[in-house]
Image 1 (spheres, rainbow, N blue to C red):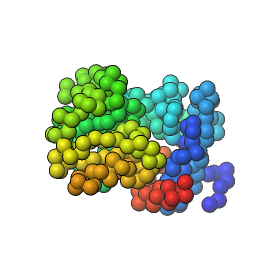
Image 2: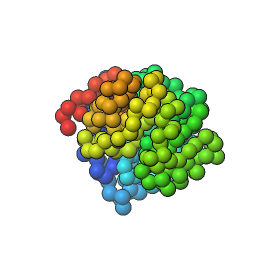
Image 3: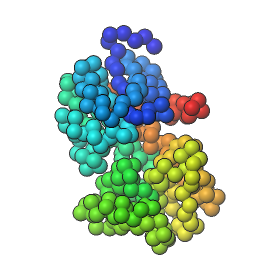
Length: 283
């Protein structure tokens, strides 16, 4: 593609950043629609975050994606933060609107969209279990609460961390429980969906070991890990006939929402999925 002074620039910052598939996904979308835009990755240390955010204005960039470890701290350097992002407590997408920097979080809606499209699952009125109480678990909890689930159980290896998250959001929904991994078993018998939001299984390192046979036959087993595309957790679920939902869709759909915020155009999701799969093969 031709890059000149009229090309709009976007980027993603994080530390590390080499693993990110977002450049491949977003640049594929720009090419698909013939947009004069380019998306590049930058490794930014935590003590240079404010400078990196200010560079959006200085370089007249259209926007920025933010990944680990900057999603929470970046909020203090923005002019405005979307209500959902403030509710989640993290920003992963910044839009430059005539010099005003606005923060959004597309993870929650991206997860729900992928769950609906790829697994045909509507969380409304359902009983769900979230494994993990970190940033991803927090975003998905917010997504489920917004979708009016019936109940949420937060299971974490360290109970105190699960309890802290549950207590923070219980005012939004009284049907939030916190348990450690041993306490999860009774809740699995009535769960409509269980989702792993931890890094267990990433790059085939470790595996979430739960008695999935306790789940009802119609349950969905979800995993936000996308390297590998099918984790051991999902393979175990498939082996006993449960429907599964992998993590690549969340990455693609959250990126699609960001694309639409930056461009005002409908995201070419299929082209983005194809680019993500090709990039995974190369890494």
